[in-house]
Image (cartoon, rainbow, N blue to C red; front, top):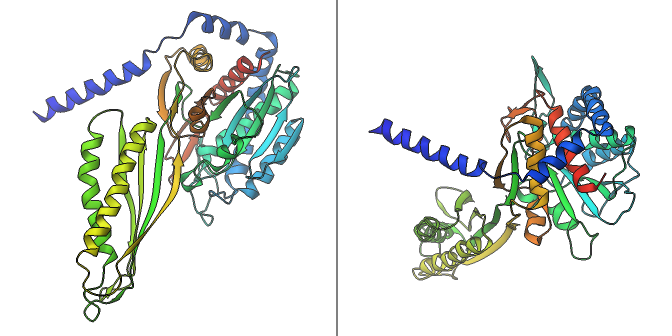
Length: 427
């Protein structure tokens, strides 16, 4: 019976994969990409990408070995900015948020296309990020996510400059801050702020193989919720409000409602991820806190589960305060520590069609579309054409101390990005 269930589960997963993979690439885009790829200037650029492959790997190692947790990207940003200057960018600057931006001016400059890789990693500043090599494989925290992508951005600027390729539209090559965790897409929110420079299309390099193309953003809401009381001796102060009880009430009330809500409709998830508070076994805590993460591809569904969570907090607080025998009632502080918007770009949009056509041309494989949580979430939510593409090569152990990168056909990731840039930028 177990074998049958496993077989059915596998068949269902294959069916889902095929549904994603079966997205048609329109002939017009296949033809357009093939014509562009066979252009003499583009072929020369492809060859140059291979010629500088060793330097691209060297740049990746240099950037990897500069610690850059979210909110502490400045040191890496300075090195990255200098790499872009030496690569031949027309101008390079660092904005108020800490994003590094390099301009390669277009011949017409009627539009702005952004090519992005994020500077930050998930690892604390004290993490050993020394790159180690075993055979052909490089190991270090953050080497693939996203230092490989940053090195690709430098290589793309260098290639356009050395091969004298000038697009019609302006190109912004960006090393952005705050993509990971509690960074909460800080760099992107600043880049796409109201009153900022108009951006017409956005390409993020932040993924795995080049057949995986992200055309949707999984939105998330994250909270730090802290229940507070006076605290006291577990025996002598018995009867005062206990923040742990209020927090437990909240979780116990929220989970059944969230479970029911998430069983239907567009995929929506929730997680009570971190708990804290209390000082000793014989003390009633003065505070109890939790970090909670909720996600969905649908902004409407995300707001729906958010409503259930906020209601559960109030109910959990009231339930504990009803049994308080002495002292002041408990209070609660609700801090929104993450708000990533969701959105989706239609599979028939030219940017997505071009992305798929390029991947198909370079690999002969059928691209697959998916949703994820990347810097593209912000433009997706604003209705601005965006896509997140893979870095190529092979990698694993993301967000772990054992992260690795193998430069197997890594040049294809750069060629993919180049063709997409030229398709969007106009050559």
